[in-house]
Structures are given as structure tokens and as C-alpha cells.
Image (cartoon, helix red, strand yellow):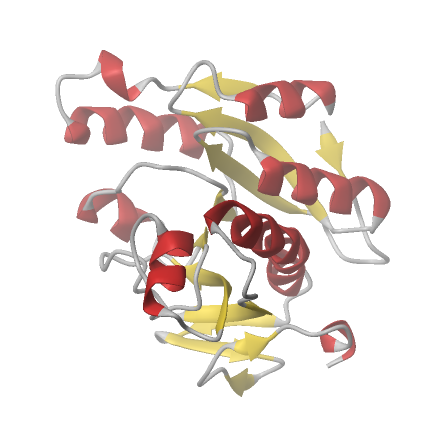
Length: 227
């Protein structure tokens, strides 16, 4: 099991939800193993039994679970089972890393203020799917990724951290996605680190970074770790 302490910081217990390849999961695992990210990944849970991210977790000796949404007659039943399984691991933070299911209000409310998602756009631009092609079609000058708290508004929760990439004349959806993924793998472990180190907190529906209101997302750059 991945369990790391950084200095005197107690490792933050997290559960990661995935649906597919798990590249952002891998970035989090690598950060715990190589960069002192102070988290304990107590479980990786997928709604798809064939998700490659499960192999990544097992390779790192992290417990894996599958709650196949197809085995349930409706979303509510599925989410009750998923919530019960997550809560067995007592996480302080639930991390959605390429988890491709829309979550219902009851589930989201249960984890209010302690569930993160990564979205491949500079929110509020391009919520939902197919963000890279939509960015190209809109001829925007930059695109990117956002880390946000999950709320009942799809991709509408408070944004913590963003990383941008320019659109190039030669870009297609695949090349643009690759550059965005590179940034995702940097900012997701960083946002989790801020929570684990107590720098990022939620107080009375207000998000604080270093005890100051976070009124707009932090823009990632090479020196952001020192901010």
C-alpha cells in the first residue's frame, strides 16, 4: 500500500475513483513514491472491471475494488454500494481520476468539500465531454486542465488550480490532449499536496489557500510550488 509521510505531516488517507487508463492515478502514485506526496492511497475503485488503472494500482500494491455500474438496476443503487465501499476505507479525500460517471446529488452531498475532480479544460469553458475538439472548433488561443471540488453542478464546482497550454496551428484533438495530459499529471498531485499539507482548506463554504480566500484559481507555472 502506498503510504508516505513528508516531515511531520501525517499522510492524508485518500480513495481514488477511476474508469479507464489511470494516467492521473499513476501521477499520484509516482508523487507518493518519488516526490514525498504525503498521502495514503487506501483503495482504487473502478466502475469498469477492465480499467487499466486497476493494474497500475496493483503494481504499486494498492488495494483495488470494482463496483460495476452495469450490475445495478439504477444509479441510486449503484451509488449506495459505491459510497458504502468508499466509506469502509475512511478517506479524508475522494479523488476522481478519469472517473466517467455523473454522480447524483445524494452522493455528492455526502462528500461535499472533500471530493476533487480533474477536468480537461479551463473551466468554466467547455464543461462535459470532447473538450479538446470543442476547443479546436472554437478556435480559442489556449486550452488546459482544471482541478475543482465536486458539487451538484456538472464540472461547476470551485476551481482550485489550472494549467494552460497554447493551441498550435498543427494541433488536432489527439496532440492537444497529449499536451494537456502532461499538465494534468503536474497539477493533480500538487492540488492534493496542498490539501494534505493543510494549505488548502474549506471553511464555512469558503476555500482558503494559506489562510486567504481563494477567489480565483491558481494558475500553474514552474514556480507555483514555492508560492
